[in-house]
Length: 308
Length: 308
Image (cartoon, rainbow over all chains, first blue to last red):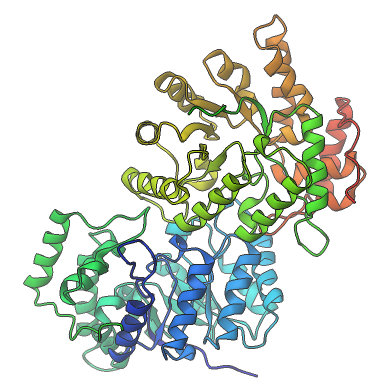
């Protein structure tokens, strides 16, 4: 059995919190719906940008329950199942599979440092064995700037070989184009997503299937335009536009900045809330960011319908 | 109200796993009892050496339930409540408080990197506010070589000042004596534990209250002798002995090595099991380690009574 793999522009969806700090399931589902309406090809909920690791496993599973109940198509969902423990990662992945999610995004175990490829191989294999479902589609999540622990090029190959029907892709948030290019060259047919739209066009030209990118939360239309037109004459110009916006955003703490943008353009101040250890953008930074965006004529389009 | 703080030799207890990978609660309780019988002053269960972060929150809480049910005095327990999410850390800490544990050992949120002291302050304060119990005694767990994220000297002072009845101590596993010395100098009365017995005597002489050390799993009597006699004429010689054993152990992956030692000396091969991403010691390494120990006449004493 070959299951369809994800492709296109996937968004690691921001997670809204209520004033008391609890995840806001209604606002979250409305935002997911809005991202799909904007043209997102998939939603990588519970990634780094989602502050997933600032939520307990139970909080993440209840949010996923709510999304599916609210009618977000499970096939469009690639929930992050990152956890330091094999048992918790397997619990999250099994829960996603039971909901019919199109895939899961699996961090390596990120607490212990200096572990061997053999040890990380045993972890991922242990998760897959515990879930024990042919419907499980694992996308490896390589983000050494945050997780420190990563998937080496060799380890990726070993995992594909050991689990060919299950380990189907990878999000490369290394920020290192050489690593992305090496993955594309060594593992043709493996679904590689650069972790930033800055590498989207270069990636597509070398075999990447799309990108999974934080700034998708505020720029699905722009990024999708590159994806839709990458073989066309406008591709480089369109790429330059999205690269320019991303570089502006990179000057700010990404998650607080994105949330502040959503709060501002959707006139919904509660959106700015983050969970510690993150903190909201300071007022001076927020002003500078919003002024930069105003200067380039940035727009977010119609806000989502308010959650019931 | 002033609650008693921990002092002396605390052991971050190894967690035994069954052949199917599940935590072995019976063997764990027997080992905890044995460590106390050997003279351990407290048990820092669910630390780094315990592979706590390779277990789900539920697995950790069920093990703690079992320990207390098995008669291990809760006042002797300082469970690790490390989690990347404030909600999960608070759940673990609240559970420990309800059991009457003498304290908890709190990692900073370790997934996101480059967070500010303000953000980590908000995280720890958030945990304390959520537990909302005067019985909560927090020991900060500073272990940047593994967690990467740590508690700066200034942040420690801010946390003590904000929560004087709650933030009562710190385990310093930085491996940096200068940091330990600075903590002792700046925060007199704060219960500082070096994270290795190598710094025990130096620490005690400058105001430390003991140590919390991995090798306590196999050397409580030796380390306790330094603690008991640190003002006596033999102190330096006793310290040299335990430093020498620790330096031998440091040449091996610590957790697999300690487990292999317990398995060997207690004739209980299942003890060698670790959870991925850790792997058991290879046979050549195990042979070399056991030969070194035999050469120095190492002994573990009587094994614990087999768990029912």
